[in-house]
Image (tube, rainbow, N blue to C red):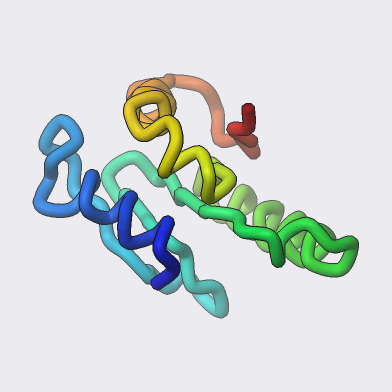
Length: 110
């Protein structure tokens, strides 16, 4: 796990966010998600510097589209957001846990 993943996991593990259970490094078919909440079908992906080159952006888009077809909403945060804005990060996750919207790709960025 990256440092950002460790930091977010400390905030999510043991049902700390509203009693909701998250798994880390959760597999869905050929993809390993940073975090996954099966109850709400939400994946949380943390993006470091490696995620901003053209090839990786295309791969992330393919991954997200695949997950969307499986009914999984995808929330993305840049690593720095977890460190600099931890409460905002949790508030955004909470917002989408209880959203009744149809699954859609959700990009969270500052």
